[in-house]
Image 1 (tube, rainbow, N blue to C red):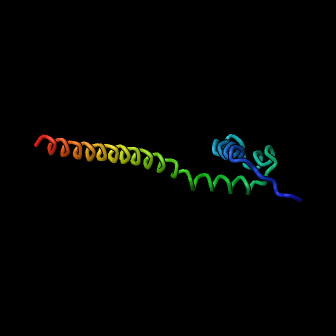
Image 2 (cartoon, one colour):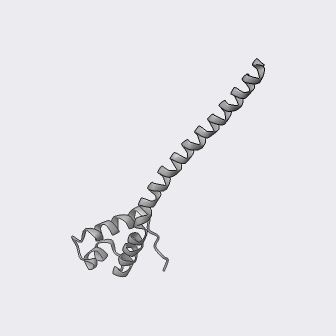
Image 3 (cartoon, rainbow, N blue to C red):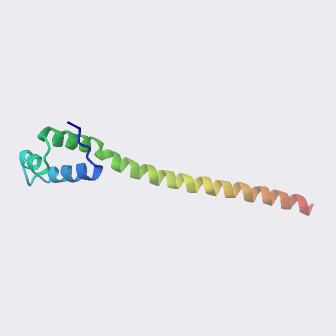
Length: 91
């Protein structure tokens, strides 16, 4: 007997339906032809990683502002070099 592989989309669909609590775990297991422990395992894994969704959002905003800051500092440095060069050329 070979192991079945489930897509991320399928697992997410099952877990979200489980979280809605409209059907019992046994009903969902029968509907999707899974063992109830498998659904519980996916649910636990999903909930354990849920806070990562919000951490990623903060990191990307922070990195965007850091990238903008780096870009602006680079521009300031370049302008300062050009300004110093032009000052020396006028002397």
